[in-house]
Each structure stands twice: as C-alpha cells, then as structure tokens.
Length: 100
Image 1 (cartoon, one colour):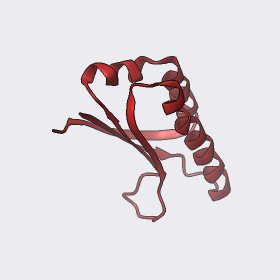
Image 2 (cartoon, rainbow, N blue to C red):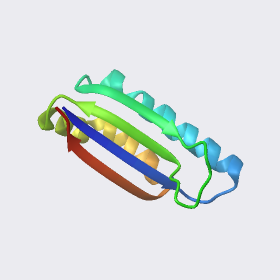
Image 3 (cartoon, rainbow, N blue to C red):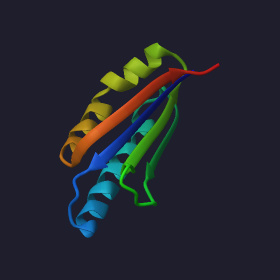
C-alpha cells in the first residue's frame, strides 16, 4: 500500500476569501475518487487550529501500488485539480511512503 500525503499553505488573504478558496479546492479534490478508480482511500481536510506552523489543507490518500499511484498522478482529473490549487497555494509539502 502506498500512502500519499500533501499539505498546502494558501495565501494569507482576508479570512473570508481564504475560506472560499479552501472550499473550492476541497470540492474539486473530493470529486477525484469518482473519476479515478485506482484511489483506494482519499481524505481532504481543512485545518481548524491556527498556528504559525500550520498548513491550510491536507490530502491523505492510499493506493494499492506505486503504479496505481502513478495513474492517479497523471490522470487528467488530478491535473485539473492541481490547476485549481495552483491559483491559491503559496507552498506545498508531500510525503509518500509504503505501508504493509
């Protein structure tokens, strides 16, 4: 099993604008499992606790193999979601690891 975790930090815009941006991105990401059957599990979360080191949004996803992850990574629906995220993000961090 491959776990793929990505955290995004969005621009420090007005709080009401940031909330709209986060919800737009979350809606786009939440649709991905409907279009990409290789996704084993998929969670999108919006941060609820403010701190200087906090990121704004996280994706935690699982794939059976590295090959099924690569299908997801290159899928047109995923690439469309990346374009939406790119409008708002200022930073991203990711970790990919294998579980038993």
